[in-house]
Length: 511
Image (cartoon, rainbow, N blue to C red; front, side, top):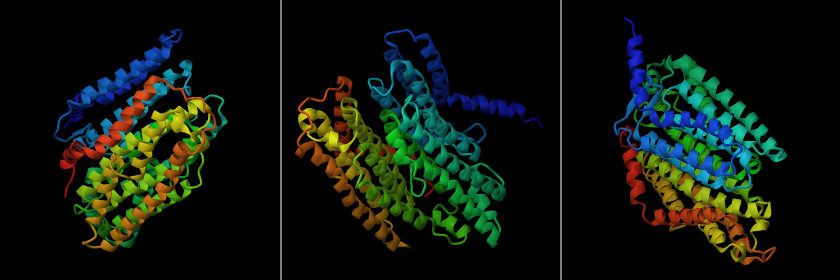
């Protein structure tokens, strides 16, 4: 039987629901061409910003009409479901906000902003594929698409030695993580006989229970997890983050700290919970691979990640490095939801990724405001900011309170549900592990409050270096006010977010 007509028909059908990604693909190419067409225009940066926002807007319009029922595209390579769509909205929002931040920024001269926007769109395309990939090959290709372009954008500042150093370190760490992940994938394929992750559970159950098979599967899962851990900057794959965050242009750092991290968690949920899950619980996987308590392993990883991130952030004076270590700590918090291994835990991860997008982009925008005026993002430049730029100081205070997890903020909402997910597991088997994890997370929150308070003290209680008011574009003022408002509003009015995440998980969760 000739299956070629069937494959063609399947690809044509799939392309009909692949339209948001196709828009991003075509948009990337169009932006490179428009950059050439408008190279002599005095309004080059503005026109390219509008064109990029148009690409994101068209993709969002097509994403809004995606079907509610899950379906498989391109012969099982991609899942088109509400779970992936939730994260795609986060990526589009992050990309569009980065355009609004980067446009007036001095980090990108008009002659170089066109390629930056085109590459940014291509990263968003890679993030789309990461969130919906259901095949090992597609997972690898999507991660590499995001990584390769990120390497270029991390060192995008021409003549900047710090940016070049950041890009080089990013490439080295990324290459090692990518190689380890690909090696693990080869083991998975060799053991399970398929690259389709939706078939992994049945293949795991069919494996012989002998020691070589068990050890091989454990090794494969650990190696594949290295690629995911590298993307979310979890310990021990975190070492690239501080130098890259500091050296890369700050608008891109803001995006790098949110979009790829959310995509990493989407991939982790789909791979570790949705496919390697043998009995509707990661404990099923532990039985299949030699009684390794995988939820406890993730819990230990969570505890170590948040602890290292917070304690290493304590002595930092550069705000970009401080927020880098803070980002590592927040990856540890979000891992609590994966360790809980439940519907509520995964929902908490989704809420936290949305919260982190809002509060962390806002915090980096405040850093951009100060860095743009003073030329330095150190904590010393924030002294007396309340007198020199009241809106920026108050907004930054709101973001720092949210990052700490204090009410009423969206950061508190996200962290609250992470704690609920962990504490719900305390009465059950292995409850002691979850109780200890909750205590460690609570103690880490107190540590985080200390180094965030250092920034607050500098802004509100220390004398300014100069009485000259900090000037910055009006668009930044609107963005700061919008981020701060959203941070507080969704900390109080959480129903829409909870409903959205619950509906997005409804067809994905297997109970």
